[in-house]
Image (cartoon, rainbow over all chains, first blue to last red; front, side, top):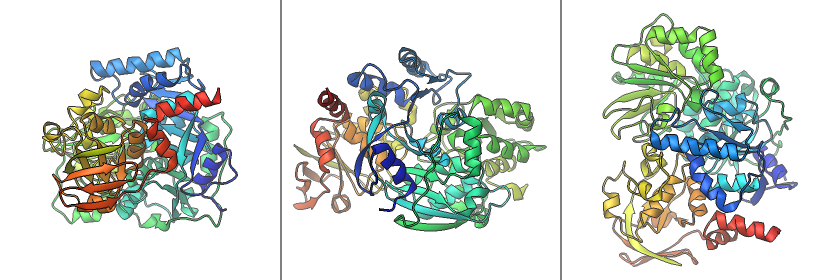
Length: 421
Length: 166
C-alpha cells in the first residue's frame, strides 16, 4: 500500500509496516512539549497518571506565552512549570533570558529533526513539519498522557498534496504563500488532514519560509504540515542538531484527497482580513479599496519572528520613520535572533525608525500582553490568527500579513506593501 | 447515557478565542473559565445557560488553539453536548479526553433551531428534536473512542492500560 510522508512516519512510530488513512494507531513519541498555559493544566492531570515523565530528555517545557510574567496568576503558572521541570530533571527547560517562542526555539536548539513524531500542547506545533517531521498540536490531557507513557493514539490522516513550482518574487515570502493557500482552500479546507509540500519550488524557499508555511497548517484545519527534506533542510539540521534524523519521501503512487499546483512566482503580497485567516486578499485588491488606516503593527510570533523576518522588516524600515499615529512592536522569537538583530544592526534600525524592540515572547499575538488592542483599533500583524477579540478588545481588528507588508504598513500608516514606499 | 436540553445555536468556525478568550487563560480553574464562556460572541450566554443545555454549531467548531480550557469551560457551564457539522480536530480530542461527548451531525446542525428542545441518546447516536418531532442520526463513536468515553476520558484509559501491563 502506497503511503504519504506522514503515513510513513506514523507507521514507523506505531511499529507497523504500513498504515492507511482513517486507521487508529498508537505511536511512540520523540518529543512532548508544553508551555506556560497548557503545561500548568497538564501537571495535575499528569500526576493522576504517574510520578515520573517517560524520558527526561524528551519532555520539553517552554514558558513563552505570558512571560516575562504579565501578572501574578501567570507568574504562579510559570513557577509551577519551573518546579515541575526541576522535579523531573528535564534537560529542556528554558528560563527567561534563555527562552524563546517554542516553535522557533525547538528547531534552533536542534530538539526536533526529520522523521520524528512530535506532539506539543500548542496548536502551532505543526511548525516542525518544515524539517520533515510529523508534528501536531494537542491539548493538556493528551500532553499529560504523552509525558507519562511516551505514546499517544492517532487517527492516520489522509493528505492534500501541494506541488510547489517556480520561485517567489522579491518581498514575497512564506507568509504570503500560506495565506494564499488558506484563502484558496478555506479555514477547514484541510480539516483532519496532512498538508504535504513537495515539488521543485521547495528548494527556492528558505527554511524560515517553510517554518512559516507549516506553522499555519492548523489555520486551514490541518493535522500537520510537512515538507520533503532537501539539502537546505539537511544543512539546517546538521548546523543545529546532534540528533540523527530519518528522511521519508511519499510513495509515487501515494493517494491524496486533493492535489494543487502552486506557482510561487504568481503569489502576490497577501493579507488576511478580519476575522478569519481564510479572508485572504492580495495587495492589489487592497489597493483598489479605501485605504485602511491602522493603529498598531506587530512583527514577531512563532509564525514570523525568525531572522529572515527581522531582516526583511529592517531592510524596509531603514531610513524611514513609522507613521505618527502608529505604534510598532518588533519581537524577535528567540534570544539568539534577538542578539543577532543587535549584532547585525537591525535593532538600531528598528529603534531609529520608531519601533519598540522587545524581549522574546508570544506577547500580543493572543491578546496576552505587550500590545493589547483597544476598542476600534486596527492592527497589521505577522501573527497567525485574526479571530474576534484575538489581540484584545472584541471590537478591534487584526489583519494578518508578512513582515514586508507589516513594515511597509508601519511607514505608510495604512495597509501597504514595499511598492508603495 | 442520555442528554436533554435547550439549544444555543451558533454559526460556522466558532473558535477557541471566542469560546474562552486568551485574556482568561492565566487560570485553569474550571469555574473561573466557565464564567467567561462564549463571552466574545454571546455576552449573555453564561446567564442564560441551564444544566443539560446543548450547543449547536456549524462547520469547524472549536477551531484555533489547542487550549483544553475551551471544552472545559463549556462542560463546566453545564452544557451536556455540542452538536456540529464538523469539529476542529484538537477540540474534538480535547473534548473526548475530558469525558465531554460531542457529536458530528450535519443534518441536525442544519435543522435544529435556537431554543429547540433536544434529546440525545449517546449509545445509539440518535438525536431527537422534541420541538419539531424529528430524529437525526449522528455518527456513532468508533469502538476505540467508545471505550475511552466509557472510562470517562484519557486519564482512566491510560491508568487501565498501565494496570493491564503490570
